[in-house]
Image (cartoon, rainbow, N blue to C red; front, side, top):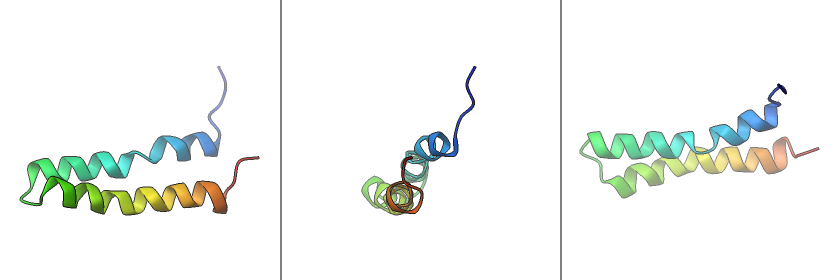
Length: 57
């Protein structure tokens, strides 16, 4: 079995803020669009970091 690299972990974490935002939107009084929109901010940050902070080798 191969080890997961930091880049693999980073790619796996990108959808996490969106899923958390969706869950918050469902269980709270926030609208779903607002909660997912708020979750997209850190997801976008992770994508930016993956591309420019720690680019693929």
